[in-house]
Each structure stands twice: as C-alpha cells, then as structure tokens.
Length: 322
Image 1 (tube, rainbow, N blue to C red):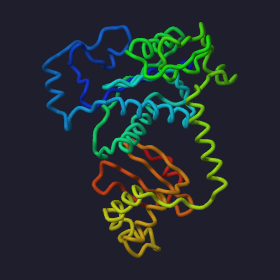
Image 2: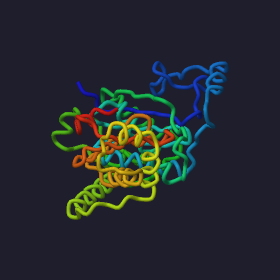
Image 3: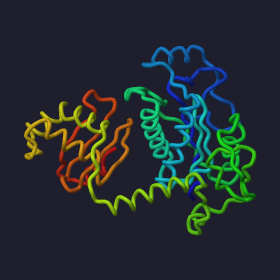
Image 4: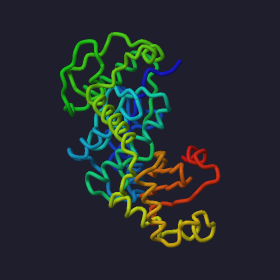
C-alpha cells in the first residue's frame, strides 16, 4: 500500500545541533508528539566544534523566499503539497509525491538554496541546510491529519492566511492556520489520483499556469536565449578551469573550439538553452544540449564552478547523473 503522504522536516545549518536543549530529532525520535532525543551537552559541544561555518538562520525575507520556492517546486514537479511552514531554523512540509521523500527533500533544499543565493546575494559556498533530515511515511488518515495539524497549528503564527471552504484541502499547502478544514476521510492515494481530487491550491495552480504559459511561449519563439551575466560568469569559470585542458586539449571532444573564448561561448549557450536540465546532489545542476551532445555540470562549491564534456552515451549518460 502506498503512503497517503510524506512528512518531511529539515533544519538550517548549525542551528539545531544534536544534544541541544530541549532536544533534537534523529531516526528514532521523529514522531510528532513523542519525546525528542534527550539533551547532551557533550554531544552538542562536539557537534559545534565540527562546524565549518556560522549557523544559518532564516529571517522574514528568507522565510518567504523558501515558502515561495516550495510552492514553485511542488507545482513544477506536480507534487501535492498539503502543508508547509518555514521557521527561522527548520522547515516542515507535508507532501504526496510519486517519488521517494528523500528526492523531495533534496530537490527542495537545492532549489531553496538557489533562490536564496539569488534573492539575498549569498555566496555559493554557504552551507544552509543540515545534511539530511526527517522523512516520515504517513500510511493512514490519522497520521496524515496529525502531521498536517502539527505543521499548521503547532508552529506559531501562520505565514499566510486564506479563506478556506469546508471540506477542502486546497489551501492546506500554504500553512494557513485555523481556517484549514480537512475532510473527515481521505480516500486511497491511487483513487485520489484516478479521480483527480487532490487540489494543488490557489497559489500552486497560479505557479503551474505560469510554467505552462512559459512553455507555450518558448514553443512559439524558437529564437535562442542570450546568456545572462551570471551564466557568462559561470561559463568563464568552467572554461578557464580543468575542463578546457582535459576535454578540449587532451581528449579533443570539441574540435570546433579553438580558444577559451570559444569554450566560454559554447558553455554559455548550453546554460541558456539546454534541452534537458536536472538537479543533482550537493546543490549541483546538470544541463544537456541534445543537438551538440554537450553536458555542463554547474557546481557552486568548486573553484572552477564545474565542468563541460561530451559523453559517448549522450542523453542516457545525462539521465544517470546523481
């Protein structure tokens, strides 16, 4: 039997260390309403000493960026977002998705990091999230109701407030406080999907419509996009790094490239007009141009910001990247 939903929680970097009072969460202590991992001053001190950077906290601006990004990702991935609440040092979400909860959490972290970097002018090497988090399977209606109530009612002041009609869960995804009324019973997930009864919510539908409109416009306008200043900067870093020496000079994968400037131009075009795009682990992103069989991997943590090459297996290789 497939779960009704997932209850996912992840914390900001260094802000909720194991051992801290009043307690923390691990794999054995992650059920709402049950005891936390007990405080342990020695463990907390050990975890603090191992930190590479200062703790990362979400102010009001950053909280809104994260909430907005969660809704965008849900709409784009066609996941069902029932409830979300972003606090200064942790994030709670309740999702229904056709993939594993670890995939949902990894995508949310990656896209939230990217949007925070863009909106708040943060450096690419800033650690924002703890390495993993809590991914609970909600296998029945009672656990689903308990998780949604916990996210919406037990996390302090609601981030947004919307009018809720009785029997609907469509606005639950906003984390909208007391006005939320969940149905008395949720049908099986497969039945929900067959009948199309799960609502994405007003805000999410608006985002989905925006994505659809953008896709339609792109089909009408086949003119390639010009690379942005940020894409050109990334392209220059990659082209002047190890990728040029290894893949252009030694392996001769790019016979049309005669200089680093040529390589910069090629990489920037792929970044601006990829036929395929994927989020990878550790905040990396992969771009693929099917026509030229070129892959660009952007790694914000690397000194040269990534690499560019042409795999023999083409799209199959790209789809296997993790």
